[in-house]
Image: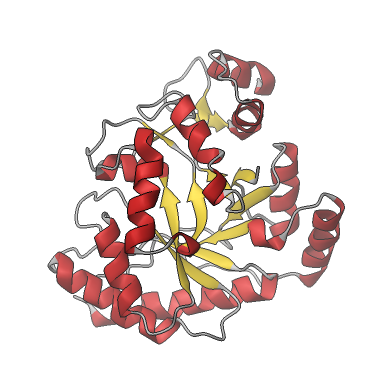
Length: 300
């Protein structure tokens, strides 16, 4: 079971990310190489990297199971302002270079939002941009995330993902499934085997390099993209557990992006990471109906 969560990339960079993942009982993790909302980036510290590689080896964590997430400010679908589109291309190239320095093999990318373009134009813009970026020699593969279809998001359907993949000249590109996004896009996660059959026919299961394992606060087909904690949403614990244990995706890392938990005395301050408890729950295969209470008790 290759299971982890989103973790921070702070002052001690990937070493801190790894230690956080280990504290959750994880053997995989996902990080940003800097704040996802801006371009501020510190130079990769090789000392921290070497310490992390040693610690990963001691804990049997493969770099194959470390995922990077591209910053939110990258939007390859919107070409209305050419300078902004070119910035997105340049910044994504920089992020890929940082991943290669770290030895990270996969970077998750939101395909982008078309904004004032048509969906078809948005997809063509993504393809054009990726053909400037993706090449067979890169040691870090872009993996396109399946989206909920909020607003003008591209990548809501498998057909849209396939169109992008088919348009990219290099085959050094893959897919990241997000269970919350798939649910909100209209795919029934209680019928995941059927979904995988459809995916295999259209795209091929070998393209799936990562799964974001999230419950959803929304009904199927809502196009809202609101993640819920494992077992506390509309997808449900049993369905997510089946996805986690699906034999066809056995070697694909599963990453939790579920919400932090708030303190009992406030509705807004989300301060407690749920991952230690959600990972334990999923590994044991038994839903903890006291999940929120136990998290609050542990951290307070």
